[in-house]
Image 1 (cartoon, rainbow, N blue to C red):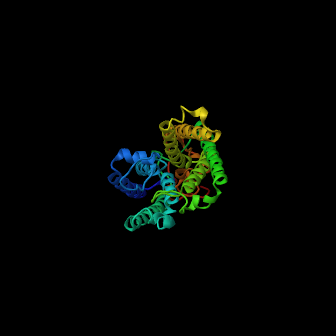
Image 2 (image 1 turned 90 degrees about the horizontal axis):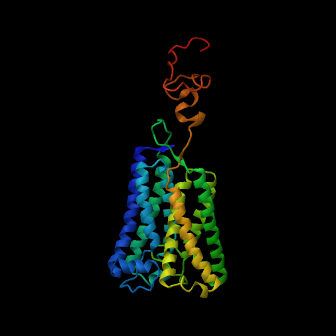
Image 3 (image 1 turned 120 degrees about the horizontal axis):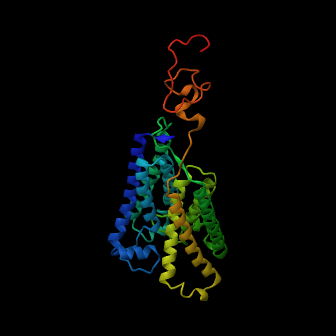
Length: 344
């Protein structure tokens, strides 16, 4: 199945609108914190002095890249439909908590009413855009009727195995840290996942536990999908790896800035595992990005290709097909007579 031209254009426009929303918030932060250096320091967790509280995070930069890539893929890629579905699903998952957290008491103490109202409007707009991407991908699909037309591709065997191992391990490691977090700080449950006054989160971002669960679900979903070489493994896997890269880069930069590597032997076992997790997360996600960015394997049309279904598809009379098999290369044979004789 491929997307119609109208669906491709609609998907690209929707992705562009979602990108504009995120870019607008990033520009807002750049104007209030005193420049890009301070904003980047804030994103990676440094104690940066800012003239006003930023509302974005490094995750929003990743989403901006996802929207731009998805817009291009919608116009040109063979996996445009699954790319739009993956983008819509992640958008909904990331922006959904904003419906109840933006208006919470924890946000009202740090942000003005006007800013929270704009954030809530953008959250609803992003949710609407994510739903629209689902509708566009579903309503705009049609069978491929031309051999020259690009059809959805699957990841190769080596790519599938690599993705399964690395993302599966990343998801398992994240689950382990989530269990440790709840055991160590049980008082923050359930606010760690749904937001509240005891946890810190950005105005337009989800609670930290919610983000972790999203990464876990994406990693495990892609790992299983890659094992079966599913078409949707590539777009979902690229997004999952992108989110993992963001966390890995932030952690590695953090460990370098605070000289954790230089004093690695003096750290506690848990801190050593934390630093090791950051480096593993970065290496694994970067590897997955590289392997999944390669062109996939074209699906074989097989005996039930839409262009050669029963009766060889439109243009060939009933009964002219299964008994005749495929025509020889370069020739399709004569069409059936307009008045078939008995026994034709």
